[in-house]
Image (cartoon, rainbow, N blue to C red):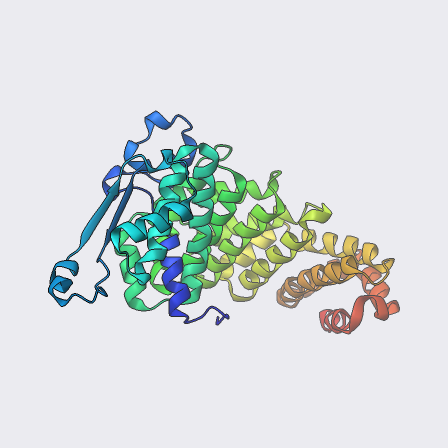
Length: 383
């Protein structure tokens, strides 16, 4: 998918610097450790130091100094977080003192900000939030292969670090977990990393992290968290084949059907996202998907929710809620249609003797409320 940020080298370069980690690589200062421990003396002291490698500016007008200035220089400032000045002021002073070239000034500012964040738990959590946000935007920008390779070489454990943030519910701020899910979704969209992400998530086993996350769909998680997880689930579904992922699809189907039992208005968008995943599974899935739907009374649950939503929507005036519930009804009808047209005649007769005909009558009698698309789906459902 192309966005306004697609293929913009300058933006990709800035996101690259914002996505980088904390301290030196030898410190093993993971994001989880960086935000969990509020006792600063138990973290490596170097987390508050500035460590910056750069090539000095050669635009001095003195050709005799050019060779000396092209050598790599390491700038070290211990306990930078204790300096009582804002990050931009510290950066400006360092630029003047060490003749930092223009192209290295933004990465210097990024390193200064991370060192300054060491001072408190709140500041460290904000730094992790910014890093994840930048990383979630970095891959969708389609950076140059050179930059992408450089990032994963400098941050080889980034996937495990992000997964680690999701293994400790209640210990990590929920907004950070949401961004971690968005980062994993961006990884899942990258074909070269999708295959390795599935086993890393434990999506191919019944008791892995992925199953644990799916079980939380029916908890009191914030809508933003639920929708972020569903986006990750959708990317996994679209990137795996039915033959290789029967177990994955089984866990997802069970979770989605459970989610559809939640009628909380704040979960409407999550219900719609879940139905898109369900449609993909039912439409493209193997015989195992059909079997799971049958054994878990999936079609019956879809029909029950459909009739409830039709009755709710029939009395609504034009509004944002009406349009959202229309989307939900359309989402319910698509997998229902697939299921009806693949069932035997006896099962279809049983369905048509239930509450579904009355719901259809309501749609046909209030076309202006439900809209032409739902009317069309309703006629197709009965065809």
